[in-house]
Length: 240
Image 1 (cartoon, one colour):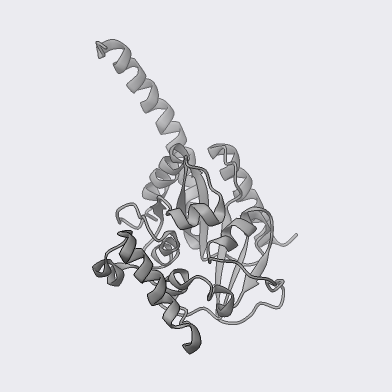
Image 2: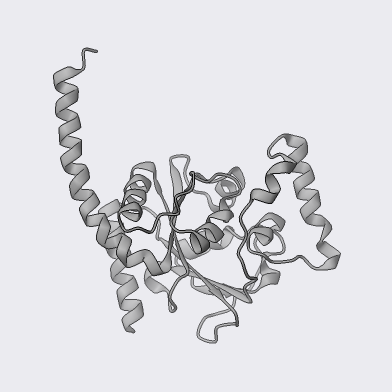
């Protein structure tokens, strides 16, 4: 086992144990050429975040831009231009969302995008990733997301932006360009990935992962102390 994979495997095990994760964290790797050491995705999926589900279930693979065309919104956040014959699909999806009252037209310019179009995007469970991830996605309970957010803050890795909402896939460009971010998820992502009603995401920049892991130990200890303090104050002062 390479040093990289051994290190990532250890990090995944540590995160899973300390946060009681039910799902494997997903490594997202943005590439400017197709990686010969990784298997190319074969098939179709309805969304870019569907690839997160496959990776969390244990699959390692890479995609090319055309694999993302079925998701006009995800293609937009990943700076992937649809081909001319499919360019109208983004307007069609947005028109449906505008008509349903899901999003307002004036919100579109504020949706983050990757600064550069990737030639390939690889996905893997964190501990199986053959390459350094650009972003690591954690699908977890709110209590675990709280701890990850606090650890990222302590590590100086936090994006310092409000908690994100729709579309969920904008968490990747935000993590790449600004830092770790919490993401509530959107109905499309929840449908395509099957994450639970009690789960949300935290996206952490790959280069900051070890620092966040180290900070998490301090955060866990600190929360135990502050939690006991709050418990005592509640027992002492709450009248109802």
